[in-house]
Amino acid sequence: MDYYWRLMEQLVNIITAPRPDLKPIPETVPLTAQAAVLPPLIYYFALLLLPPFPGHANNALITIFRSILAAVSGFLFFRLPLAYHVPFSVGLTYQLALVGLYGGFRVLDAFFISPYLFHHIPRRVKYHHEPRSETPGVWRNRALSNSYFDLHFLQPREAAITETATTDQGYPESWKDRAAWALELELSMRGAGFTWTSADVRHTKKTWTPSVSDRIHSIILHVLPTLGLSFATIRYIYAQHLQPPRPDTPPATFDSLTFPTQLALTAALGAFLMTAFSLGHSLFAILLSPLSPSPLSYFPPLYTTRIYALTSVRSFWSYGWHRLFSRLFLVYGVWPGEWLERRLTGKGQGQPADVGKVVGGFVSSAFVHSFAAWTVVGGEVRDALGEAEFFTGCGIAVVVEEVVKRVVLRRRRRRKGEDGNEGLGRWYDGIVGRVWWISVVLYNGRHFARGWVKAGLVREMAAL
Image 1 (spheres, helix red, strand yellow):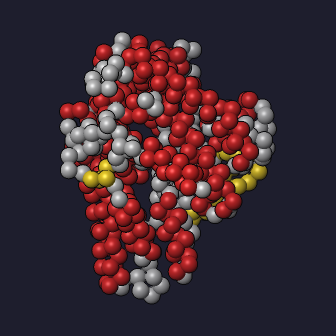
Image 2 (cartoon, helix red, strand yellow):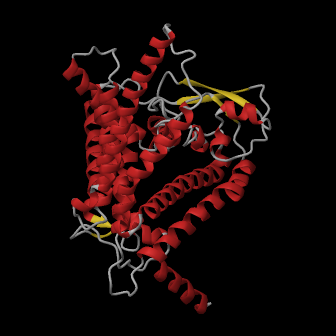
Image 3 (cartoon, rainbow, N blue to C red):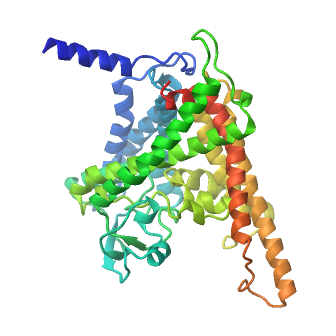
């Protein structure tokens, strides 16, 4: 028995051994269990007091106590990446920064911004599924459905459904209901199941009833092979071109790679992340499926359009990538950007402010990801700007493609001599659009990959 305990201890030591290439912020210390648990725990206790109490909605003591708990929780969330790091993982230290920012900004939104600026406390949303006459096995119908299973490489065998949502009129009253409400809201990153969602959580009401067997089929036959191929590509490129010849020499830089190799590594990193998110999404859905119909078992799609169906940079970020941080970017990026554009241009509240929306969203994303990179490059700002350059490039590309699109459509209407967009499409539009967005994302994605190579994150992903 002692032998097995010693073997287990050795395995734990190997897994948790400090990574020599980790470059945390100076003076940060290894993350402790207490530091990791306290922020979400205090946040949960504050959420218990967020819904109005019957007959005590204006109780000052409750409001003050709730605000104190929220302020402490937010402070501890923001403090996480500035005071701690994960010594055995570059990736987890990067994630720690994302968790700290996301948690802190979420607390500010839930307890201060939404209640006081918008007079809004999230309400529960219940989803109802009605049968829909559509054959899962027919490619034409499945392609039109934008189904949940299509998007996760699943082969649906159950009934097609149309999903509708009903918002609760009131708030939970008993402590049991409050406990469930608070837990569901804390675990729902994108606000799914509450009136905190934004349009990017679901772009269609058509879907398929979830099936555990379908998810397992997806993981085994589609996700794992794609994940394995991208991992093999990352490992090969790092081992052949970046790994130092001796332990005492620094690794090669990203810029030492040939341009095609840079693009290949960037594409492999993107495919790895996309399938890893899908894998995690499916695994959590499988593990929590016994809780159905509880909202904790509800997993709306991460991606709402197949990659090959995307024809612009904007469609990639709107439909082709996950939106786990959508609420953060909406509150702290999109809304301020729209407000600023309206102030500068004199637009009314009901008029679209697309430039401010795009710029605000990408600027907030650039800040969040650059901050995370900053925590794993020793606090060097210059080495953490790759993420900012990537999102800045994508934001500029979205604005440029919208301008080009409007100019081209205007010329086509003039030649046709009619108003409206019907009949203005060309057979080559989709080809040009796909070449454009893939080129933009891969070319600018090199900035992202450069920073990850410098931080040692690519080496960790290559398991070297």
